[in-house]
Amino acid sequence: MASNLKICIQNIQTNLYKWFEFPESEQTIRKSLGISDHDEYLIVDWDDFNSIINEYTSIRSLNRFSEKLQEIPDNYSSLINDWVIHYNSIDNFIEEFDINNWTVAEVSRDEDFGAYLIEELSAIKIPDNIQPYFDYEVYGRDARLELNCVISDQYYAWQ
Image (cartoon, rainbow, N blue to C red; front, side, top):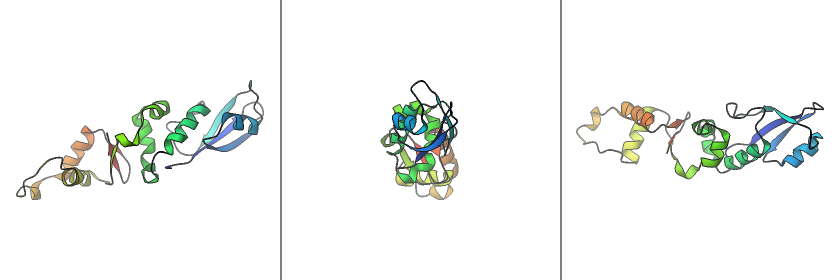
């Protein structure tokens, strides 16, 4: 699992709050906080995923998101926020994301990405006499932009 989803939920009526690690059933959360069927709760704090979780994200969405996170290898956890942003919302991410549809290269710079595409994936064939003059950085930058890569400090990912 790439990341644990930890959310702090508050009973609006009593101001009682508690941290939960997802997935967690809504029934367990309501019982733990003394929230009746007619009372409301609010998500008041969360670890990570600041750009995609807000006070009104549903417990159902959080559970489905947590389950989707468990499909992602630990070493790709630095890509998760950007992947969700790529899909524009937590719900789109849940519905559309499939790790098998992504190619991930362990590179951290455009130059390394360009070299990876050429040497590992044989994206283009460069004659031996031209290789010393080839600009891998420019090729990698152009490929990153064209492929709409999701990047982190150590990975470039694209579909």
